[in-house]
Image (cartoon, rainbow, N blue to C red; front, side, top):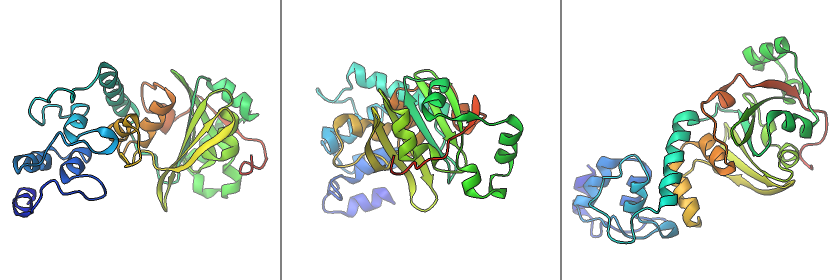
Length: 269
């Protein structure tokens, strides 16, 4: 079908939302569609978002041999190859979409104990945590929203909550980010994955869409990350903060410890 449509159009490289059909096929990881478009004359090396071409992007993904040998200037740099390799490892390790309604925060440079100290949280007995994990919706949300899991990973720590958005609340992120950076993700059942960034105690960006793919306003590095972590918001958040978890346990549990946040206003922070 793609091949037939490509044969019929006046311009196989026509733009929609600033990109060609070939770009969309590469970003969506549809190599058969991309090959059909290239066979119909689509240009793999046409520069688009962030100065990237679809052909150069494909060199960083799972099908680097999708197009003919890249011309001069289209090969990946050594640093870009390293980013692509670590992205593939991260996606394999933790590339799971968070459960709908779940939240997490990735924090650079501090371990679980320091995160607990910054949050002034107190341990939750294992038996109480197990009851909540088994039947979270048997409780009122205000009873269990203060309970979060915390896990140390290489490069920092992960704060999780399988049933709510607490790790991404501004007052949580800003406390965690003192002297460092934190990226929060909330799998909003109504609007999809939402992201927030806090740096050195201040909320830096919010209403982001981690795992949503490259965007027209992205920098070259952001375009590469958007492609590598499309549909993988957790791996994206880990990469953004330099976390290097070996597996999905920090995300899906069980965490190193469950703790209860103190009662305070976490929205005006």
